[in-house]
Length: 550
Ligand code: GLU
Image (cartoon, rainbow, N blue to C red; front, top):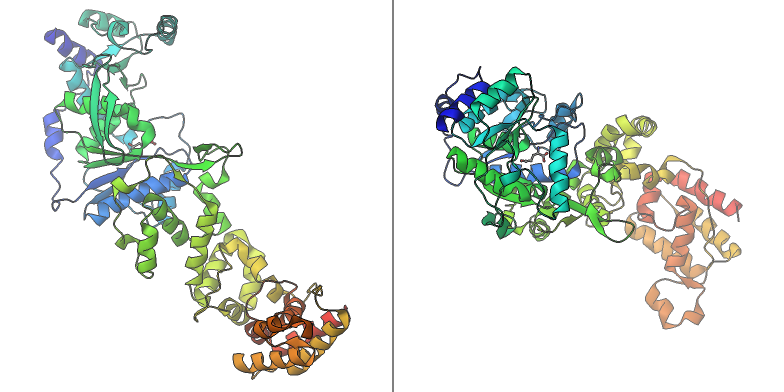
């Protein structure tokens, strides 16, 4: 039999002469400090960077770098049917925007670095073949010539008999194929795949330690899974085993759709005589759909699954990063509150603290975090960021901003930098609406119901006379109170509440008339700051127009 296995290996891989010991020796041990982790993000270049991919990549990157280790970006392009042009670029450049830049693998500028490459799987075929040749030679893998109809027929039989489906045990037809038969079939030009000869048995249990999910009892693998496809490309299972061995990955952090394959992966490492890496299976980002049930963010149904969505809506990268950090470890939020100015990279991510059942995507929360991030920026930073975003997404806005740069920065400066931070911008696509009344004098004034037309007219007239360039906030407040009192309004809520029958309303009602006249809105920044930024003349003109419309 051993003789047969070696012959089969030679028949399958006649051109592979490289000695795997040499390959293993060439993979020099990494000189890393104790506790330093080697992690990788290993996406397929499907032309789409999923927000869940950024989440997984960020966790991998953090686990590596926070431990002083190495983070790898490996491209898993073994499924030629799913590949699209520019797929790698979309991944590498997209991650780069989030500051997720690997130490090894493909960089955002598409160059490849690192001594353990190539890092693109389609360039590693000889390696997969060499190790597989060894596995076949040792009798732990074999070629399978079954046609898909045959496999289908086996499946139907299994389903009829209500037993486990798949290619295993007595159903693994070519498990004990002889070298003679292999030779004959290959000579006839028959196509084959290579399968592992699993040593597991049905019903066996397998104790598995997952770094996120904890200790688990899984079923052992007993399937003779495909390791090499008939096109000569490895399956994920085999590529993972060879690559993570040669790249010396210490922690495989990946989506939990792979959890059920973990027993197979551990078996592959064992059959190769290698120690397997530790595994951390992370749950996907989920949302509550229209029917109220949880589901994965879907590439097809949810625009927010694609990172392009965040770029085009204009969420600052920092906000999305902060949000993802929060999703990964909910204690990030408290840490951030205590350390408002530190980089998110100062926070230590803990795998065992990651949500095991699926992190729920919450737009309100993302918006809140984003508002905080934007509120902490200076007016000049906001100006630059809006221009940068607008170059691609709102050229007209950029033109206006550039033509009115000083004024626009003053607008962004309202309630910024002082004690009160205005949190009214969650994303750059909000800006147009947020500053609309600074861009046009065409204000639609609607008199607040509480104030009759005649009184509103008087208030507006008084304001026209009162506003001045030299007003300090206190001076303006005093003037406003004066206008209120002389028109029958209380100068503050407390006075009003003490005896409401004495007044037409309070200071807030007077301010509301002016606010609506200036902006057409009920919720705006501070009146005084708005008047100063608009300029007294423009403010007067708006008051006058509002009065005329009464
Ligand atoms: N290419 C695999 C995927 O896209 C990678 C899984 C892993 O990280 O090992 O899911």
